[in-house]
Amino acid sequence: MTREELILQIKSKRSFLCVGLDTDINKIPKHLLDLEDPIFEFNKQIINATKDLCVAYKPNIAFYESMGVSGWNSFKKTLDYIPENVFTIADAKRGDIGNTSKMYAKTFFENLNVDAVTVAPYMGSDSVTPFLEFADKWVILLALTSNIGSLDFQNTKNEDGKQLFERVLETSQTWGTDKNMMYVVGANRSEQLSEVREIIPTHFLLVPGVGAQGGSLEEVAKYGMNDECGLLVNSSRGIIYASTEIDFAEKARQEAQKLQFKMDILLSEKGI
Image (cartoon, rainbow, N blue to C red):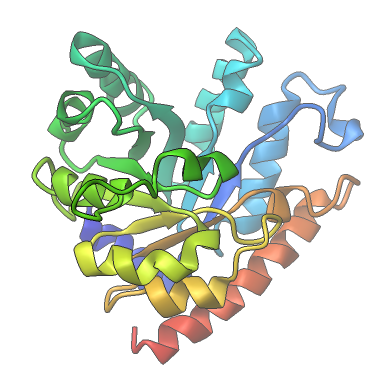
């Protein structure tokens, strides 16, 4: 999906919501467990309930890999079921070099045909550039994440007082463009979004942590939204596990609607 197509979806749906399909076999409703593929059936119903309210889905690969071959099959069936006009993100956090990186890129962009994959930049340009060789595909670089351990490295400063995440943002702009590269910035880092936007004013940001993790959508929009929106705000548990009963899809839709309603207002206030 191109940048223009993604922006069009945001404007037409009045939403910049990304639904995280972090589907845990131990958390889905019990009545699904007797089915042939409970993971896919859960995802299918969530997608049916939310596809008109979101512009992206982000399956976290770990939840599928942990199930072995059957998990990969569920993942592939889920990707095939997602409508073509919805942006797909493989949250895989890959980050190797050379031929290994090329094979990861081929896996997700050729074989699985996702629109984007999350990549860790710690090993530098040769761990990222193989992913940037595919037309209309996106790399989403980890920049300023929401976990507690991120403080171990991401905010450390060099002798010039520049933080590591700032160095990542600046250096990586020589690898790709705002048409094929996004960045992960946690919703609980909203106070630093202004710093991020000073360095990358036009790039899209993938912002996890709104909902169950307590991030503020309004704060994210205040400091992170640009003139074309420039945000994909992800909610996973707050939507997909809104209920563990037979009404789980209906409850997921209600939670997605709450976010989409707020997003419509925020877009309007920005003149988008």
